[in-house]
Amino acid sequence: MRKNKKGLLIVISGPSGAGKGTIIKEIKNKIPDIAYSVSVTTRAPREGEVDGRDYFFRSYEQFKDMLHNNEFLETAEVYGNYYGTPRSYVEKLLMDGKDVILEIDTVGAENVKKQFPSAVLVFIVPPATKDLEARLDKRGTETDEVKARRLQASEKEFASIKKYDYVIVNNDLTDAVDDLLAIIRSTHCTVKLNSVLVHKFSGGK
Ligand code: 5GP
Image (cartoon, rainbow, N blue to C red; front, side):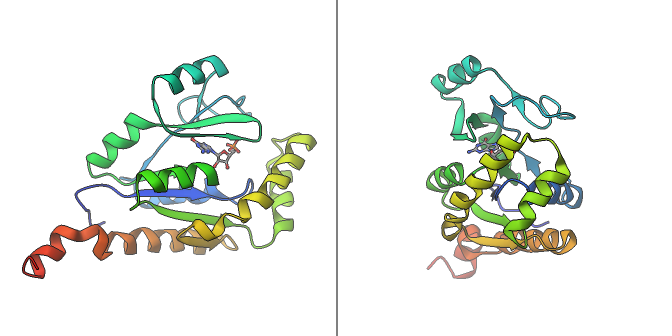
């Protein structure tokens, strides 16, 4: 993949059960060089989740300490738990020219866009909202109460779609992954992200 000097920040959001995790996994297979920012959370690990791979699982006190030490790029309270993106990891990768994927909620995405206007914001939706419940059921990791809370929250999240640059309907996994690949590739070619090149070819005018 063509590279700009600075890496591209790709922000992925979408309701619980939209298939964000699966799409990101496929993207990592297709672009091995892309980095995924592992978030810090106060939520308890689900079965099969590994500390440092899926999340950095921390206590509320540890999270608060990190917040006070300015260790987060952004944070948000989602479904009653705290989540945050580690600042130094992301900033270093971007400076090294690596593309970085963040999988964060709509509040976090808005914060990131303010700090990194060139970040590309992508919202993933399932083909129909009724599919969300089916997908959460299939995953089988949430209690009924947590599931209900997530479904309710997804309505709020849908209201934020307008703030995103792209929306992908996850009807078919292969198509959704192709769409995201196309978005990443085309964003790399935007004039905005290629100012040095544009300056050179436009004779510095
Ligand atoms: P889950 O608990 O299902 O892994 O994630 C719940 C929600 O938190 C998802 O919408 C996910 O995108 C969001 N999330 C995960 N990590 C972060 C983070 O670092 N910052 C923000 N703002 N949201 C996050």
